Length: 354
Image 1 (cartoon, rainbow, N blue to C red):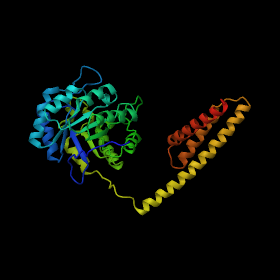
Image 2: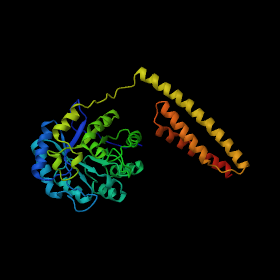
Image 3: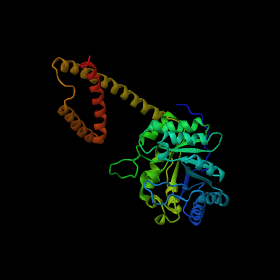
Image 4: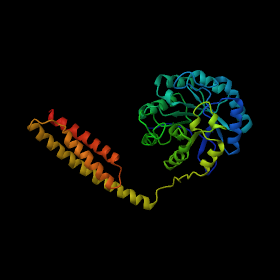
């Protein structure tokens, strides 16, 4: 997928990724300015603050709205940091630009709604401002790409994506499940699109921010957007996932940023081995499906059903246990064999229904 993009050109120092940091919500002018000055002293170049904060349920603090925008302007004036905030309506865009906000982002609930994204895109026509699009709350890559396409079609060329994890009904370690393969696939499809990690919303807890930041660096993410508050325990929203500027500086200072170097001869040799094994794996899968089709002919001749649940359970249990013995997770092996079984059933159905 070819996106015509321009570099974000976000400021950063040579040893660190670019970091957008600041409180979940711009609560008071004192809180905003205290946090901003503390972050600036730690070398932060971009300040985020939630101006509009619609919550899952009504009745909580939902942001100061336009009242907070002069505070953001004061941050830029006094610290030199760029400022960033979330926009969810064309009116938000109008006010953010009026007060000189430098970076806009589209939230997860908004990016899940093509109607809302299109309204935002229309309000951005003719504007040259960086726009970052968070993934939708559901793990829907096409919906995420669609939101990016709408913003891009409006003429925005300084465009990026934010990975903030995906909602799940299951009990889990993270507030939002990372599902790292989805942003990886996004980057594969749009290689020149910068992807930023939001460890605050993925983790939902302070103690998870550091390991999530390192994971993002290990996976080649371009930068981070982290919630930082001068007094996180007293934050008016999302207190558990915010860290002080001092803690954030400690985390960022200890990140190991991997070099994106050209492929060495040794790496090329190992990748060649992988390619050879993948060729062999495809050959084995082809032979396996050939036997599955032969089984389908037998089942058809003997008026048997396609799916034999006892046999399927036996395969999943046996191969899952075997995978564990071979150093792989049982759940991974089960997923592989579930996919193989699905394709086998599809091919058998074609034969039986002819």
